[in-house]
Length: 227
Image (tube, rainbow, N blue to C red):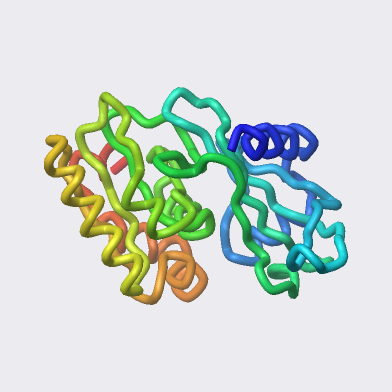
């Protein structure tokens, strides 16, 4: 709804850059480096949380991500409530919730041109970005939304970062079919473990870079890995 879009924009505007906050602690604990180009992410120290309509309202620290459309307009936000130390998510029933208009949109890192990589979760996408900092990326926030991502007009090749679960694999199939019918080459990037954040934490960024390099088109490896 329009109300939710407005609330998402107000929340993001009231949040601060992640440097030096619990949001930075959280990402670093997941093995994700803090690099330039994370402007879509902010931190709110006391973000409103309620278990359900009858539950007492709480104020918890949160990583806040801006969801934007192809024109860069904010249409929504995702909140990831954090533990008081930042070392993991808050111990609540649903530590992650999105609001606003999400379908077709996502959390963007870098400006997409002819090449774009898309995945589900922010942590998964940022794990691939740790290995490929130059590649424009988008987190769709769920398998259902991944299948519905809108393609930039200039897009010629789409890398799809897959999560190894039935919902993730079904979304990749649906997105691949849509891409192919739009004349876009679709290339799947598959992790060794459940998702790329698992791989990053298990094997480190150097090994992840080599694993991803083997799955890229050679000219993209040259362009985004510099070799």
